[in-house]
Image 1: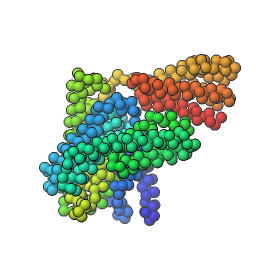
Image 2: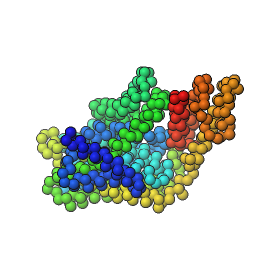
Image 3: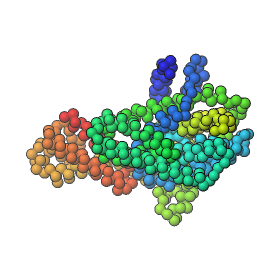
Image 4: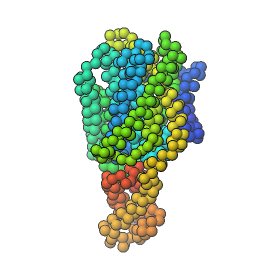
Amino acid sequence: MIDNFPFYLCLVITILLLIMLANKIKIAYPVLLVAAGLLISFIPGIPELHIESELIFVIFLPPLLYDAAWQISWKELWHWRRIISSFAFIIVFFTALAVALAANHFIPGFSLALGFLLGGIVSPPDAVSAGAILKFVKVPKTISSILEGESLLNDASSLIIFRFAMIAVGTGQFIWYQAALSFVWMLLGGVGSGLLIGWLMMNVHKFLPTDANMDIILTLVTPYAMYITAEEIGASGVLAVVAGGLLLSNRRLRFLNSTSRLRNVNVWESLSFILNGLVFMLIGLDLSQITAELGDVSLTTAIGYGLLITLVLVVMRLISAYGAVVFTLIARNYITVADSRNPGVKGPFVIGWAGMRGVVSLAAALSIPATLPGGAAFPERSLILFITFVVILSTLLIQGLTLPVIIKRLNLTDVYNDQPKEEEQYLDLKIQLKEVALDYLHHNYQKELEQHPALQQMAQKWQLHSTEPDAAELTHQPKEIYQNILEEQRRWLIQKNHDGNKYSEDVIRRHLLFLDLEEEKMSFI
């Protein structure tokens, strides 16, 4: 580790430069990082990296999932809950089944149990890849919400399939009622443990005399506590982190002050940035190790198997996307659905094509033990590893590079065009917030308003809808009044978020961030 430390430093600098290049040429950085890692692995003298699965599952996965849970809109997640649940659970299972049948039929030596094992590994699309790609193109909020929500949950369902398949391969039998009970416990135990630890952490923040630095350290510890606790009791660590992260994200205003919230955003953005970069670079760098373990299977044949499984995954996801549309169009005649419009063929195709695989698939494949419990070599382990790598690489390169072009060509706004643009929503809320501030000021501080010129200037600016008042002009008493006004605006925004879907939660969070910045400015006066 010490001998290779300069190499790791150079790797971090290389990641930064490659992400700058990706932003410059407007392609998703996961594509460039995997390809660069692949090329670097062929350079003579490069240290051979052996990636432990625990390194990804325990070190990388919890903070990345936790950050995603904090960023996602709970309102959007709940609004699209049916289609998100179907993609994250039902469709993942049917995808794993299709992979199992294809592998059993076309790949010599693959039993159905091994096929399900492979299916559990490669069935979940990667959240980071899709998010990085969608950053460069304008995509309707409907589609981005579905993709973000699905990506939070599909890792859990695929890892559950993977765990049951591992038991079937190791024991040679599969007892369905035991698997069903285990499945229920993994779901309920994972969600329950995540919510419990989230509640405990929330009270630690709220009742102990922590400062901003302590709050940030606690948020860094929290996802690991959730994941490890759930895994120790045999439940889903992924669901624990997602459930606990969603709870804390939606209660952040209750237990974190403005200083902690602002610093927390900066720390987590930087942490997620470097973790995502390292993960995709390591995928490419791991090729030499994976290829060396192929054994008797030729490289050409193994690549062919990988492309076959990739084709199965792409076709199944496209079928599932259009199947979900058909089901929704039928179901709207009997129940209230999230969106009763006919989405046509464009939107489902984008959702179906956005199925790049990534870090979770690699980690699951690497976690396969070298031997079975009895000491025999684990069957087809090296081939499963190589097929997984081919699937990740081919989906990133083919779908990742073509998805932005497809989104631009399809022009999805002709279907999803009834939601006001976020900038319009932002300006509308900005005007209403000024009216809220004026009403609160006149009803609660009329006497102080008459006495303090600074408050009068502030009210005048709100009335004219001009620039924001300058907190630096306030003296002690008006400063306290302005803090109360900011708190009233926060309460109003939160209520507005709960009232319905007129305003995007992303827009409301932008205003909440601005209020935090205003409050932080006053701490320096």
